[in-house]
Amino acid sequence: MSAVEKVGSRGTAQSGDTVTDDFPIRVRRYGGLVRLNHWVTAVSLALLAISGMALFTPKLFFLTALFGGGQMTRMIHPWIGLVLVVSFFLLFVRFWRANLPTIADGVWLKKIIDVVSNRDETLPELGKYNAGQKFVFWSMSALIMVLVSTGVVIWDQYFSGFVSIELQRFAVLIHASVAVFAICVWIIHVYAAFWVKGTFGAMTKGVVTGGWAWRHHRLWLKQLVEQREAKDVASALPASADPSIPHSRSQA
Amino acid sequence: MDLTPNSFTLMRFTEWDNPETGHLEWLIRKDGCMHCADPGCLKACPSPGAIVQYSNGIVDFIHDNCIGCGYCIKGCPFNIPRISKVDHKAYKCTLCSDRVAVGQGPACQKACPTQAIVFGTKEEMKGWADFRIKDLKSRGFEHAGLYDPPGVGGTHVMYVLHHADRPSLYAGLPDNPSISAVVQVWKGVTKYLGMALMGASAVAGLVHYAVIGGNRVTEEDEENAERLRSRRVSGGEDARA
Image 1 (cartoon, rainbow over the protein chains, first blue to last red):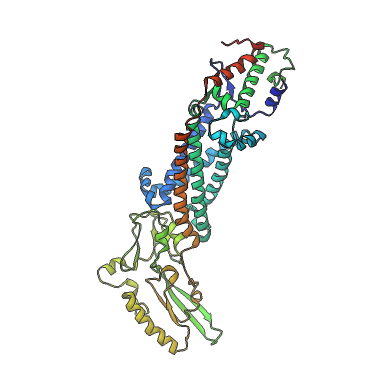
Image 2 (image 1 turned 45 degrees about the horizontal axis):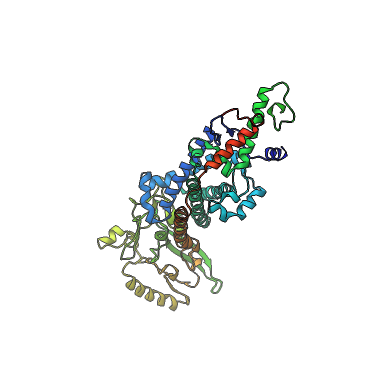
């Protein structure tokens, strides 16, 4: 049991993550509110990318038609940005701890060739997120921070009087460059979900199969199974919970 | 006093103590759009047709197409465009393009009683300037010259300056204006490299999927997961099966 205990103490499972009673086994990865939070983030990021690219080059200016014209696009883009910032911040608060780097991430990254070649059998066991997902999480966090701070500087309607034109020039250059990287990270994020079959269910229904969890996030699955067992045992023996059972909630 | 969305031009006035002559000089210039041959506003503008450059050199804002983003302000080396708080569109001197189109001079030139402002073709105006510069030089202004800055490809509003070697004496007229390097990078390499990077990301995904294909969960994975649960329940008995 010592290996299991180690998993439990360093696990990445989050409140609400559970294995279900279904057969075959399924795993609840995201609750309804988190999924809604992610959808708001996804939609606002997509709208920002489209409206931002429309203002990035005259060749894509026709995309402003989707927002009701150029004036509307110019007006609405920063407000969608604020929605994204708030929405992403909520995701950040929820997920940052599970995205802290681990030793296994280094091993995983060294085997990145195996990762992209679908040779999962050679990869280390991982918690809720792998290094690629953590890269998406942390790079998006940083890029959005830069985007919002430079975005405010070039929000002409409200802030043009507070910043010098020279600062605005730098801000617009950084905003555009960083947005390019954010869109690239977003493309990687969406592609990875499409490439790794069974992932979209986590976004839409919040549930993945046990096999998916075993294949991609085995430590996380083991932790959840162990938690579930502890809970079952604890509810069966409420008064005299066996202290040898790891992480029995009745002890807390 | 400054340019506003409603006032396209104004006089900027500097009192300058010339240390060489000991004279107090009144340096006056008429601020407003310089109608650059290489306009920074046009370079920065994202909206096709919102900023146009006519064959006569006039740079004009077409307000129906203006979206009020303020990019022209970042592009302009002379700090000229202003965004209206009323209709959120950019405004600046049009060089009275409507009057010029029907063969008239701009209103400022028409109104000026002393011919301090003259209007004509660029060649005519350069000839006129030469005459004025010779006159100034004959009166001791040895650095008199024409302000037609090459950094923006020359301008279609030009100044005859007594101190053409030091334009910034005239209320901060830029000595050697050009479109900011930051704007050049933004509207140049960033635009092309950015589109290429985003396209490459998408193509990389397509190629990866075509070559490697999807990462599918196997039956074995499902069985392993099930076994993990079964092993943990009541010493190996699968209570849920």
